Image (tube, rainbow, N blue to C red; front, side, top):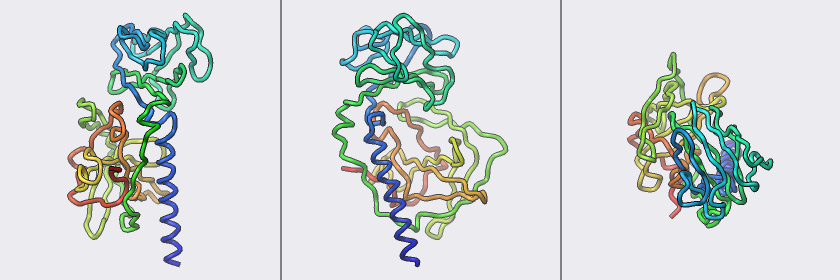
Length: 278
């Protein structure tokens, strides 16, 4: 029976790994990113032309429109009849709202050929995030690599929430500061020792963890790894380091990933989860 449970667990983790692999290879994945263009307040021309404020790949016409940032709302006035927004042809001369405080997954997608872009907001600043399904980085990706699965790194943690979210300033992969919402901390026993990690806000019934450990910069990504942990019906946390994975900035220079706070630097090696594929 124990062997059957262990086998089922390993099968579950392998299935999760396969999904992580297929997600990263998808045409709209982090590997398709080819640009992260900052926008200034006011008008910003966008296209492949050298004079454009926001640059797109050479497969795109010199200019396809003007993006305007005003009063924290971002609009795109289209000037090319090949542009589509959320799959529908855009009308030349018409302005479309492309960011009005939506979450990333709810933002309108602007498409022309193999190129797609959308406007994200980070700590009060706006950026054009650009994807190209034909990006060689995506097409030539060697694949993720995982350390051997070890059930000893799958534990239950206790969650202590804060009375109110606490903003935490951390450095990010672009050399600026990101503000994370610290919702509490988790405590757990791992390999006979009690550990603690600060937890951050995310969507759904789960916590977001960012950590470094003694493998960081050696066999795993130097800036640390990400991990999501589900909140169970009894309030305890299902914490599985076998699902620790490299953040997007490990695969592309165009991601903006927060680094872990110093409280989340573990003094031990976490020898499971994703590792470098060299």
